[in-house]
Image 1 (cartoon, rainbow, N blue to C red):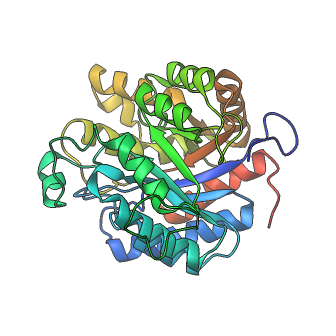
Image 2: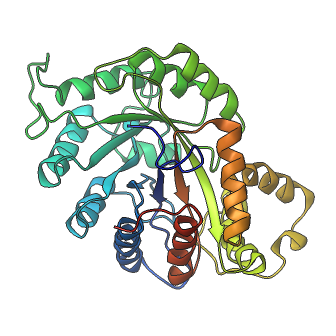
Length: 339
């Protein structure tokens, strides 16, 4: 799975998409943009395209993750498609085995299933998703194993996942704390850390995962993918401007005011207070904002610090063409092979 293409700095790059709904737009346009981004990433040589499950968020359209992945899969041919992730407490493992068994049957050898333990929503929304909330997060390890069994060649359960059984869709554990690192290591699964929005425990989680990893049928040695924000543009100044949409959205979300992705504004950091700036400084530790050269240096420094095996790049840019350009410039910076 892992390894380098040219040198250590040229690790695989992938795309994380939240299918953002921008101010003045709607989910239908977001979905067209998501397909356009996946097709663009495929041409640029990105390894995989993942969508994240969120519910009840005015600015995120990827709630029905498997349905949207099917649309993206139909419009692409080589890039891996997957969930980054499915929030398993919201679902029965059987339903997810059937959904991803369906995707794997439609797009064989291209599907990944990243699993998260957070609900990806608030308690009221989680309750509306019709799951028992009492023990779901605690059930996560058992749910993961049950789901993997449903997709295995010799399922142990009386109930069959059709489609699903025997398809062995690769499972990833997602996390933003040390819990996911321990579970991924114990099960011998690849680990994706959400450093792009929760960088606090990144080094500790990576260390625990690598030191306690047990090889499995799916994976012989640890494999770490890290979330990373990139805002690349032709100049540093333009990139800083483009990044303000995401900065506003992040501050709004953490302040309890989630909304659609707003247009960029000049000098946003100078207009907010010290608490907001401290919040942004923290999350910007896993971000690169600037021209090709600036972004290249930022990515290389992050990889050197973490030893990541792969980066999952997110770029919450308001203007779709500028967003495509950001991914293009990043690919250019690392000499990605054009498909």
